[in-house]
Image (tube, rainbow, N blue to C red):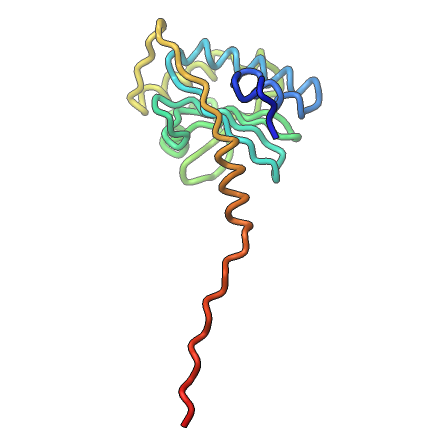
Length: 174
C-alpha cells in the first residue's frame, strides 16, 4: 500500500518504481526519462507497472491515454527499450535499421547507455515518428505525469475475485 507522501506526489511514487531495479538500470531509466521529457515537451507521461513481467513503461502521449503515445520507455530486468508506435510504417523510414521487432503496432530500439539516445540516427527516427503521428511539440508546454499503476492493480485484483456461480435450473420431473 502506498504511503501518504507517495500518494500525494507522483514523482515520489515514480522514483519508488525506478528503485526496484538494479542501480545502473534505474539510473539509465532516469537519464532516458529526462532526455525524453526534453525531446518531447508538452506530451504527458503515462506510467504503467507490469509487476508480473518486472517492467515499468512510461508512455509519451498528447492525451491521457497510453495507447495514443508517440513512444514509450520500457524498463525490464533485461534492459531499456525505446518503443515507437506505428512501428511498421516507421520501419520503412528507418534507413539505419535501428528498429527491432516484428509487432503489428510497435517496434523498439534497445538502449545500452543514455548517450545512445543522442545519436543522429535515433533523432532522425524521432523526427520521422513525429511527422508520421502528426504531433506538434510546444517547447513551453508542460505535460502531466499520470500514474496508471494503481488502476492496474485494482483491475488485476478485481479479475482475481471469484465469480459467483449461477444456479443451474432444475429439470422438471416427469
